[in-house]
Length: 287
Ligand SMILES: Nc1nc2c(ncn2[C@@H]2O[C@H](COP(=O)(O)OP(=O)(O)O)[C@@H](O)[C@H]2O)c(=O)[nH]1
Ligand SMILES: [Mg+2]
Ligand SMILES: [Zn+2]
Image 1 (cartoon, protein in one colour):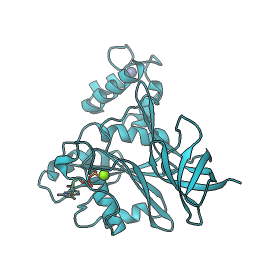
Image 2 (cartoon, protein in one colour):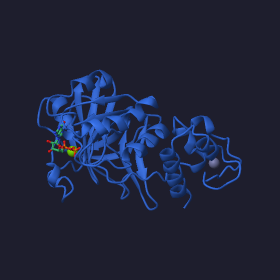
Image 3 (cartoon, protein in one colour):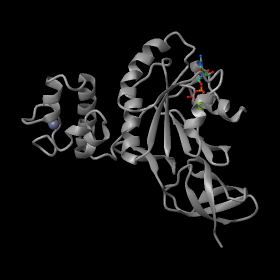
């Protein structure tokens, strides 16, 4: 008789699952293809008091994933708040913008964390992040080395996830919130090495009875192949109003006549950098 349980850790093909009563099992799947993610509620068949087999997953409230031209990688299921952890050091890449698109597409609320507020480089980064604040995303500054208490009110009652590049401080923030060293922290210098000291799998923690937090491995890439190029504008709060306004349904927003986005850019109504980002993602999806 199958029981239900939640996946609290996913190691590729092996999982840790926990029942509502608190029983924990080491679990494998029957199928070769693994389509379960940390946060999934699943039906399990216990094999003994320590091991179980995952039969199936229950309907998901949300699914966060990324996809490149070849494969799909599940990030987490049933998350309803995404905290994108950024810092001035190491150098931020395009991941923030991509993760925001993925959050919009998945219908998940997003918060931008500006960690390492203690570093002098943070001043310039703060300025860059003000753009995202103007789009309506909360931008919260933290210094994980002190505490992360200003994140607590935003997390309360939600299933939250920390997502971001390696070395931004996701695991340090997790530990600050848990008041323990449960999550493995990597030194900046080794964060991009073999992964020995960095987070290698997604892990779900309880902050309190109603509040969960998933710490995830650093992402170098965030493929968005699961998004539809024609729908892309809807996921940009600053370009949203231009959705459906281009003459061509499959407009690449480069040289087409009647491109509403190009017109808005020429009129100085939208940022050049955002147009360039939109063009890049559109090309990627149409390729
Ligand atoms: N100066 C400073 N360093 C931090 C802060 N938060 C984390 N770090 C350091 O950044 C490095 C990477 O942290 P880690 O939590 O492993 O990052 P993750 O890869 O995002 O999980 C470690 O050396 C941390 O001590 C912070 O607020 N300020
Ligand atoms: Mg980590
Ligand atoms: Zn266009």
